Image (cartoon, rainbow, N blue to C red; front, side, top):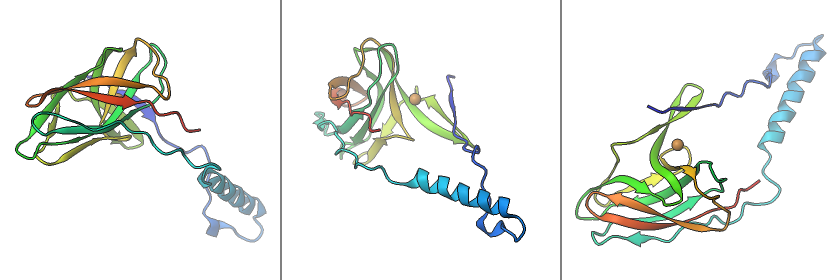
Length: 184
Ligand SMILES: [Cu+2]
């Protein structure tokens, strides 16, 4: 099974507890003050607010299943794209998202993000995703997502592409996916 690993540990900044400063140990106090400044700088909100998020239109199958709120990020040719979306099951019965296809990539895979200690990894979900009757399934950063592997052309900010969802009961459903600009 393919596994992608990212090291999320952030232990390069030495942190002293503020209460650990003692008379005669100014070096330690200064160190604690510097660490606090670094933390404040990292937590400061961005100077300009993020633009309003752009999400794709909702599409509806003949069975009543809905898909929408899709979006993606810019990615280069030959690179890997990502798609996030929302599914809402038909009220009268469950369905199963068996896979997706995108003409602009070698293949599209559903992945889940899993955390093991300090490591985040992601795993393909070849068995598909259950969509409960009347329930929702969210593909969002840090959780379920769709990966577009080996892109044949770049995904450019402001563009819209179409992926096809393959559902066991509802059949194929074309979903528009806008590409959001990267926010600095
Ligand atoms: Cu992934």
